[in-house]
Amino acid sequence: MNSTAHHPDTAHNTSSSPDPADRPTSSPELVQVVLDACSVADADTVLRVLGTRFAEESGDDMPRHDSTARSDTWTGAFLVGRDARDATLPSDLSLNGSVTVELQGGPVAVDRLRQTLTSAFGVQVSGSASGDQEIDLRLRLTHA
Image 1 (cartoon, rainbow, N blue to C red):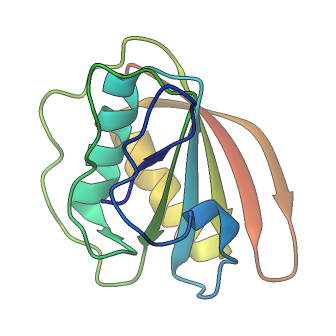
Image 2: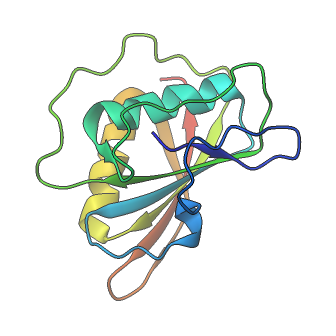
């Protein structure tokens, strides 16, 4: 999975493609995901859950980053179509702290991704904004 950390002390962008947050959401099935101010382990846990069910836009399957690094923000883009994987979620889904997740995309795709997160974590909606064809949803994830 193309996970890009934005932090001066880390350099674990695994792809030469542009940052997913800089690209417009071009498909109703594409959801941009941004994880803020969380540990590497918690970001990895959340991204593994999403990667279990949905294809990452770049085609990679799992996030890759240095588990000893610290970062403030991770980004990814997931294709959340009707052909979502019906896979069992990983069994080691503990979060050490809360994780703020921002989702941006088509309403149906964002809702499907939110449902996956709800099946794995405690989820509290902390904000949302809707446009004609896109929704921005901010969630706070905690250990379920």
